[in-house]
Length: 299
Ligand code: GDP
Image (cartoon, rainbow, N blue to C red; front, top):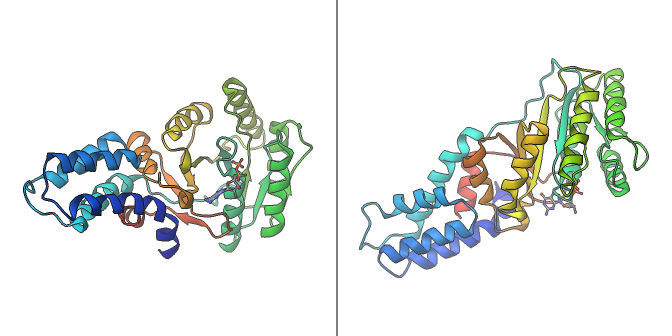
């Protein structure tokens, strides 16, 4: 809880300080509510959400002093209501050996880092993970995954820079099978500049992995960087079309005042949210919990 509140402190202080500023000195009127709505929209919560919260706050409270704490409580409960249905753990189904998790997202979103963190969690849970350095486009991505592999003691299957990502994924899946791994995390390239190319590559990775296991991948996680704010909406749309996303991970919530975007995405797409990233360290990945998140961003 401490790590979560600290991680989300930029978002919560941006919302919380504004709410305190708006409600501590004057009685509630139409202007207060408009200002509140602006604060919530600025925090990327989305217009519908901002609207609902504002109406809930206004109900029966005109011309009264309203405690900032009461406003924050309404905010927290509205946010929780939207997040509750999407807060779902990533379940690694043991009937698949390995359970294949395809990781997608634009460059810099935090895919490689998240794979490292997930590998550590899988290991701590007594599972046998393996990593596939499927972002063959960037040498740095391959090296970075190897570093995570060393750090967590998890084997990494990799090839040369520029090698075919699909054949790497194929080799990795076969290797994971041979070594009786429980879960294989497959990194991918994220060049959004070339949407057609990206789509073709992801489709090929999936097609080729299915030659080894026709049910793979068993989860396709889209990693989103919270600091991009509203751009995340576009990223969900692109990757949902290209890769059949089954769940989300949102990173860098520690470095941004825009954590509200997670709420807007939940409301709009209703995709499961599995984890949130609150730092660069191996332990800075928290299972997503609706109530905790809602309370943390309400400040
Ligand atoms: P990729 O290109 O999608 O694989 O992204 P990387 O995993 O290389 O991450 C890009 C940068 O973001 C790296 O410097 C990471 O350390 C950093 N990063 C990833 N997740 C988080 C997070 O939750 N919080 C913070 N502060 N930084 C993160």
